[in-house]
Amino acid sequence: MTATTVDSASPVALTEGDRLAVDGLAFNVRVSPRRKRFALTVELDAEVTLHAPQGRAAADAADFVRAHRSWVVAKQALREKTRPLNPPKRFVEGEAFRYLGRTYRLAVDADRPDDGMVRLVAGRLVLSDVQAMDPSQGRSALVGWYCRVGRQWAEGRIQPWAARMGVAEPMVDVSDLGGRWGSYLPPATAGGVGRMRLGWPLFQLPMHLVDYVIAHELAHVSVPGHGADFWRLLGRALPEYDERRAELDELGRRMWMGGIA
Image 1 (cartoon, rainbow, N blue to C red):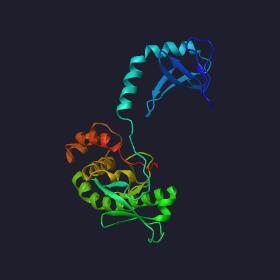
Image 2: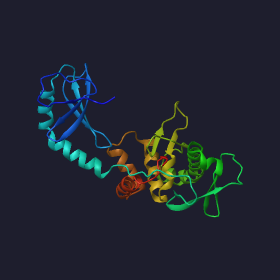
Image 3: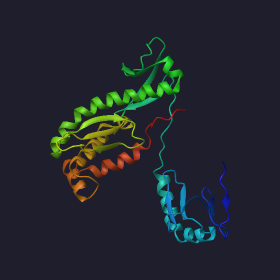
């Protein structure tokens, strides 16, 4: 369904799904009867959403947009600068995949049993030809490999970092977190064990950046949120955390996130 583009001078009320053009900028319109005033959000893909109260005219919205144009332009520029550049992959001989900062080429083996298990053999990630021919199977097999080896690697890093930070060791799980690098879930009951969740794409990054995410999530064992106490604790264990966070933001947006070409 194509969105209707509304004239910015129109006295007609905006409706859900409209697209409003104002002085060279385009906005997706969301309308809510519960909203009392206009608001703007710039999405990760640099698209802008105008949130409007029900019954408000396009001309009123345009006035609001013009008053906040400099904010929108600056925010869009920032989104463009940090827009994910995650390349899709093909499951063909020689395709490059990264693990802990190193590049490994894909090998398609017609003789390998189709047991769903990708293996790293002689510096090559080996996929069966059945998996290579079925993109969904190939993706599932490779993601499963990252989850398996990533968890094994991370479990060996938790104890030294937890000891350095003086926090309890959580359980570790590696899975698809929808684009997040990691999260921490506190224990469900007093005396229980928390759970650190790490996203499988994390393990494409160099070791020092994986360590940064592990240390970051371990700080949440002691301090929820990202207030001054959190950064103070992280800084004691990892004084260069700010540089690593910036490197993660830049390099992380170039990692494979599961897209298939």
